Length: 356
Image (cartoon, rainbow, N blue to C red; front, side, top):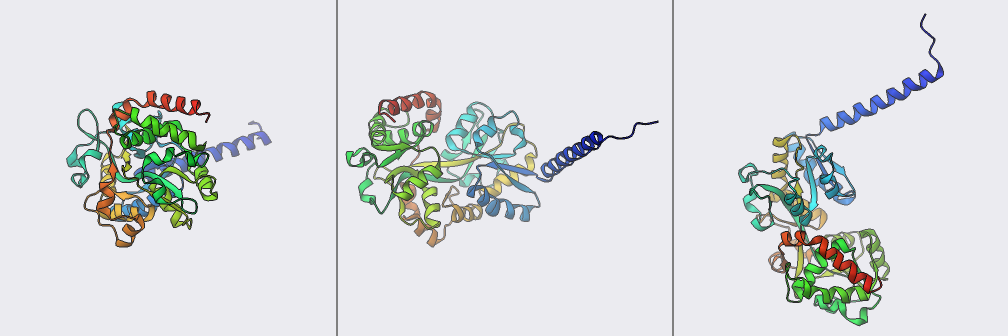
């Protein structure tokens, strides 16, 4: 005679049923998605879904979904990276991953419309294959609280070193300051991506004037919104989004030396599945109408040279489109990547010596 089931047996069966159901549900979700696109959580993920994925799925029948992750570069470097078909990364991270051979490569003819993107912003591997496709960019200018300062106060990047701003500015973490701030400051002071020594003077002055090193965008949003921080090197898309949300006293200016162009690239982790569907998705993401739709929703700027932005959106950018493009500084990111660790150490030393 078989033993009667005990309460523990029932609990175990219930537990196993729940686990099995959860696993099956997860597998079904994964199986249902032909393209899983990993990006940072929040508004960007929502905009990606609404302006790229939903219309793409409706038009193609290929199911595309968003996977929100805290660190997109980490997602590509993970042993489980192939679970994602596409990942959004910063341009310099894309260049670094290409050097490490972490990305799938594609021939130009596999991606219709690639010829309409500026060749210098397409990331390629050593074989010349495409491994990163920027579908938008923002720029790094000087964000400021217009209740406490004006654009004229920051007509040059060097104005960040003015002693009158002591305790009224902020600076980002070393990993970003080394890639963005130091690079832009070098250009503003006569150097370039290879010769960043001229940028040390401006970075040192900024650090000395900084109230704090901000740890997240939410952190700096609060500091600027309350007026504790008057100005900070900042992303144009972030200021645009805050203004759209009603914070009209926050603005951004491009100093006379220009602004750092920051492209965001779509990459495909090596070993990722559904190559044909991914190629169609990538081609769709760089179509002019797709990029315009995304730009109007996020404050980004299209990379497709055939994209035609609405007049009211161009007005919200504050400059005619051609004039805006002429002010973009596009450094050699490969050099920045190759020297990243050394420059992070340099920035950390600058911050330590300034007491921050």
